[in-house]
Length: 197
Image (cartoon, rainbow, N blue to C red; front, side):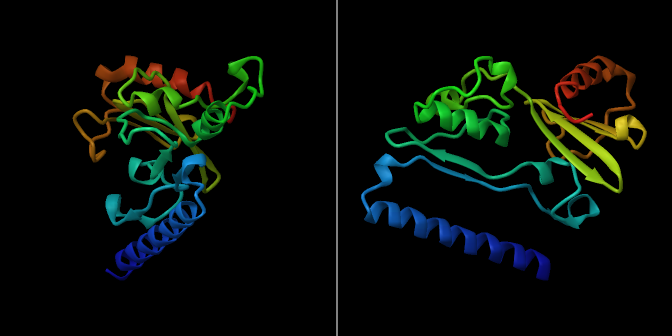
């Protein structure tokens, strides 16, 4: 209870500080000239999966983060799409009208979210990746809208395939079920996009 109380206290304190920044933008008449981006670095286990930690986990509860973008003149909305924090940079480059840093978008990790800011339910085919090193083992995760796949130490320390359509709390690992071999092969192809191997 003390850890949960401390977590909620931290969230409340942060919320108050964000409010102070937004109030200052209003007071200084800068709100309509400012793009505001709010995010966290990773989630926090508060007893889920038997863990009490904020690091070294690739479960959704640890990889999912708060992520809000407010653009002057835009309408509020919530997108159900799976995105990643690597998308912040290309998004801000586009929204600020800055020159693209690379002639080839393939050299840039992440994708501009501006289409989702205009239409939150727009088509989006980009998975989200997470990587962690724990006890000298590299953990890699790829998340699509339906699937979450985790590979530890190239499979030597385990793997997980989780179906968010039927199992949003990630309670059933489907990786050993031959019925999902094709899905696992696809997720492994996604993981090959990671520069860390």
